[in-house]
Length: 336
Image 1 (cartoon, rainbow, N blue to C red):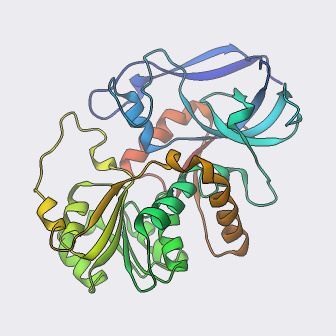
Image 2: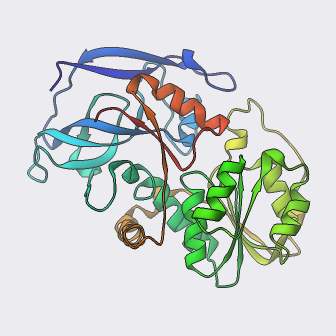
C-alpha cells in the first residue's frame, strides 16, 4: 500500500459552467479507518451530472459541497484494511467514497461486489445508482405497458440507456434522443431501440418525433429538459406519464430560463408529471440490483462504460459530461 494519498478538493464555486479552477489536487497521508469502517483502494470512481448541483451554494436534492471539502462520489475498489466483521481484506465493495486513491467507507453504506457477475465499472453504472434510477423511474413512475411508446432523452447516458432496454423488455416501442450519430447507432444497433434522434443534427424536434413516434408518446423519461422536453410535451397521449429524472440542459444556467409555457399541454391528455429521486427507493435497492444483475447475466441488458484514465483526470471526466463526451456511464480508472 502506498504511503500517500491523492485527493481532489472543491476549490471554488463556478459561475455558469465549471472549469478546472473549481478543483484542487492535494497529496496527503493515507487515511485510517475507524470502528466499523473500511479502507478501500479505489479502482474506479464515478462522476455524475447531479454533482453540478452540489457545487451550488443553495438547497438541492443533494447536499451542497462547501469550498474546501473533499469531493465525494460513488467508488468501487478493494478492501485493504477492515475494521468490520462483515468484510475482509481483498473483498471488493462499492459505496460513496471520495475522489482519491484511498477512501474510507462506512460499512453500513457499502455493498459487496462480485467481479464474476460483471466488470467492476458496471457497479457504478447499470448495477449501481444509475441502473436503479432507471429501474424505479421507468417501472414505478413511468408505469410502462406493452404497446406503449416510450421516449427517453439523454438516451445514450448511464440512466437513459438502461431505461430504454427495460422498456423494450416490457414490450414498448422505444425512441431515444442522443447527441451524435455514434450514439444513435449504439441505441438502435446494439440496445434495440426502435428509433433514435440525433438532436444536434435535428432542426425540428417535433417533426422528428412525428416520424419516430407516429402514435404519440405514452411515457417520457426526461434526463435533459430544454427544447427536447418542450417538443415531447406536444406529443403526449391520453394518460401519459412523465418521469423527470434530470435537467442537464439547465444545470449550468445562472438564471431560470422561462421558455415556452408548456403546462397547458398536460391538460387535454391528463398527463402525469412526477419528479424522481432514487434515494426514495432505498429499501428496495436489493430488488433492483438482483433483477438488473439477472438481465445483465442473461444478455438482455447491455451496458457500456466510458473510462477516463487516471485520478488526475477526474475533473476532465466530470466536465466532459456537459459536452456529451461519454457513451454509457462515465467513470475514472484510478488504479488497476
